[in-house]
Image (cartoon, rainbow, N blue to C red):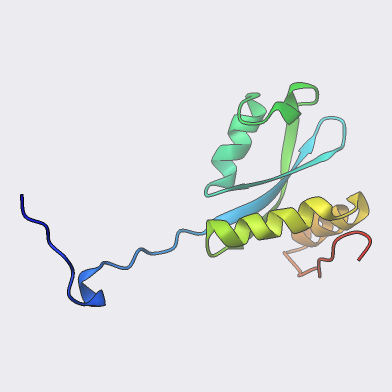
Length: 112
């Protein structure tokens, strides 16, 4: 068995970072569910089928209402934590800005 050790960083192919997304889904009861995915449309379809999140067992997923792209999974996770800390009114502002063409809304956790 031969073990090849790269000599220079050029020998190591640089992995292209796959974008990840933070998304909000409106449930039938009007609540908003926040999650991350590398394919939010596919994830939403799973939510509609009752798969992927217990959240939708009691109130089915109705609409994908917000999607925000991030360069990698780590960044998306950090943003998801921020969004989950927001009050519902701030989440609704995100949804409204997305519906009007994706204007940026400054995020700060509730109580901050």
